[in-house]
Length: 391
Image (cartoon, one colour):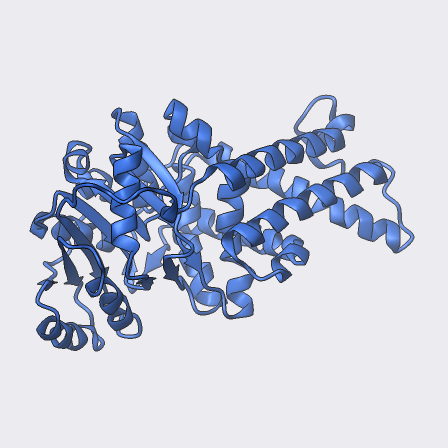
């Protein structure tokens, strides 16, 4: 089949369109690679506003102690750490009780019952913000680890940028094959398709991405956009909050914290599939046509060219797709994944395995679509509210 030939006129030229699209991706990736600043690139702040570090925790006995210890030992002079125990059924509460006796600036909040229409994590973060004392609010996850200078560097970056929301991508650990075949797609998408410089300069909400593992808000801006209450039923609360910041005229900035913050999102393929199933369709604001076309086009761009090369190598050349264009497309894709591996410190294997990573993520994307429409999406034992979808 001629790829996009069933959808586009002049479809005999779609291989050229693939090459041009990937070339644009290379330009965006190079811009992001050199433009997005590291957290350590900023001068030390003159003032030290009080910061509330906010951590929602539900059944996190394997993560919470390392996370809290890394946050409770920051070299920043004015901060508190609040952790909300969201009705955990494991040993999370006992660990937090022990840690709160050790660190005076750690406060443990007991979560209230989940109201109807709220996602669990969103409700937990809402309660944390209400209990916080800080002028700045740092939301982070229980599966993160923070270098001792992280908070100081983050406040310096927020101040220097004049930002109302500073978000940062951490170093994502991928220790199993299942993680290696899924998690890098997130960094690849950010690097290759989101022109951060333009999003920041022109306040383009559609080209912004906010990472929930690290969101540092000025409290006034957080409250002005409605906080988590305004996105209570949106599966990707972080992205939605960042878009609200831009929509309402506030300043959003994205930085690289891979040297300061570490996160292991998932521990196997099943966890990764469930986690991304919850999020992917929501990232597209539940637009059905946009979603289907985007994943169809990514399939054509990243999977068809290597299949054309494979078919030619096996003695079955595909006449509709010129071999030189397939070779150029594969080289472009390899270059994009090389930049991704370098910037996000992923295993070099992701470069060679990129067709498998993309193919697996397409399957997860379709799973996200089906599960969301059927109301089957769930996370941490809770069924997620079915959203309103749009064509």
